[in-house]
Image (cartoon, rainbow, N blue to C red; front, side, top):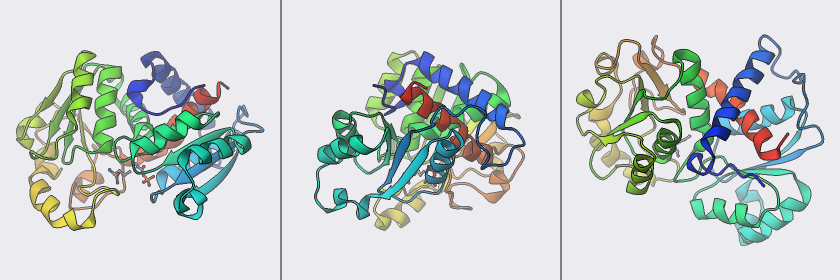
Length: 308
Ligand code: CP
Ligand code: NVA
């Protein structure tokens, strides 16, 4: 059975095949209404559960629409409304849901919850974000980069700000797709060492550069994300803001990257905090292509998981 739990747990050739299929499916739908069925209906007769223990706009809508375009059906469930939020174990939830549905996508807090679900489910499980990683986002981001600039291998990706779940999945991707990754943020907010060491062991160049201006030199892609994530205590806000203000992505910083560097943000963004509107809405920004590509990338992930 194929779970999609993390980019480092999926073979590079499978990741590549998913991106190629995502691109082809995207092209095949060009100009058609969003609700129109795909020519092929690979998920016909399949039921997909989408569980959210945290808020979501993109993940929720893109998975739901993607399954429907491919002929499947969805159940969107909020963790707090399930018995899962009231003491039923994850293992029992996994066993029960596996009797009703063909695939489970979950957005949750602890990575252990995702792993336990996958261990006890007899259907594929997809990671829709945990405190530690967000692999579906990065598949969409690689698709987006390559649509605009060609192969990402050997390119320089620079992450500004908090070394969070999205940063971690970028580091996984550096190892699997062979690009360089530079993290630029304050001490104490670095990505976990385990991610960095694993990507390095696969041959990726992963660096930490505290000076944001130096970090973005030669960058092909500049990326940032919110300074306070959903799993972070809101009480961190003030401290995070004072720590991370020097890492804001603004026009002056973008001007130090390569001329044709792209700007990405997984969204939701806090405009004028981690990035200025001038950058987000500027010519180098591909943030809404990233959002769209969640749909196409995830459709390919679902097909891979289900072998259809
Ligand atoms: N980027 C992303 O996962 O967005 P949502 O939180 O809206 O799903
Ligand atoms: N780092 C953010 C990503 C949101 C899609 C969070 O976890 O809140």
